[in-house]
Image (cartoon, rainbow, N blue to C red; front, side, top):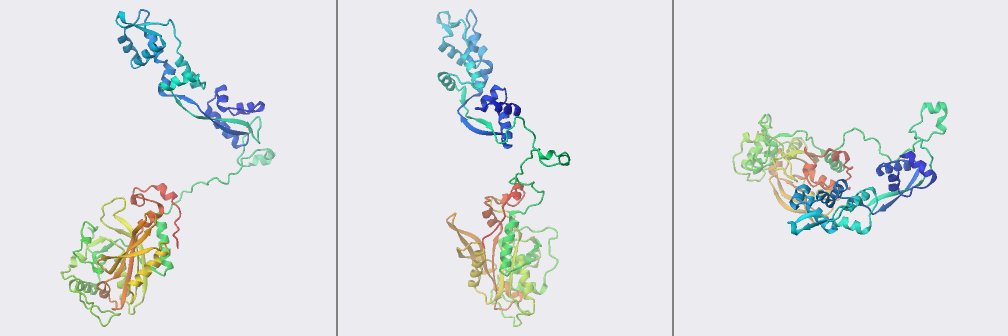
Length: 501
């Protein structure tokens, strides 16, 4: 095809690539492919032209091959006439249309005196419909009146097409030599490199995709949150233990043993080992008395006076067997409690700011916004004489680094914080306040049994990692972000995460 195109251009331009292909018995798509290849090397220049065309429908293709229904019905009528039932049987589905057209064209007649028998009226006929369809298929349109009839019978349909006007390009030559991709030793030796044509370098081409791992969107957003915490002077807590005891997960937080969150319906309990091996006995005794009576000998290196808590507790019996049950942690606050207990055991109090971002597990019903495992972001500050205003100011400073400045708080209830607040942000896209986290001040019933003095307070807040990640990456279903249904191509192509600071 290329050689015919180049030789044709020696004498004249190619005005219409479709007509050129037809004249040389080439497939037009093959001609277009050759033209594009020649154009890329500058041998030719192409100018596209749009045309209105027609193509045969499935029914039209059948008629172009087998003949029109009227011609088929005409051929079935014998010299002595034929019965209609006989025509219907032989022509099948074509009988009704063919007979109707034959009557309009006066090719046949029905003799009512002879019982409706069908006779030939014309001695011979020409199947013009078939001829017209074959011509259209070859690219020649019939007269407008005939084309309208074919359109009415739904034998043809519009099919716009594109042709190309072809002229010589800047690098035109009667023959095409293959461009070399690289210079070789042989070219250097015989000097042919001086006249050899080389392929130009395409500096816009993408390189080969490296077979390497990719960071999951959750890891990218997690890294950004972690950087914000570190910038604010927080210390990361060790959260690499998924299995916790009920004591640290619930009891140390002053969460009652009859609380619904401790049911099998909400928590994954471990069968083997079912019980924890160690708990600090002195601290366990203080937690037990705090749950049952609200008073205990708090005491410790930082609180030698052992000032009473001033609480009534839950006024029910506390079971060590319940506290020893192992479970998949339902929140990273279980680690926070252990870090605070360790801090309270020191001889001298030291203010601290802790944070964690890690996985937690809850026995949730799976849907588009809930999973049985997700990631919790938690921050806490422990210092003397902290108040609710300190909590609100810290939260506002934290979310300001995320670019969220329109923050509002709403009172709520949490078992181990008092006061407690839900955190809302004004979502301009949804035009409403959207909850983005929870917060509060740890209760004295949680802090005093650890050994903290009366004037030490702890403020804390938390949110999920999945929700901001879904918003940032435009993901509607959490199962498309985390779990076995994640599309690996999304992992490979997701963009870099840069939170506003």
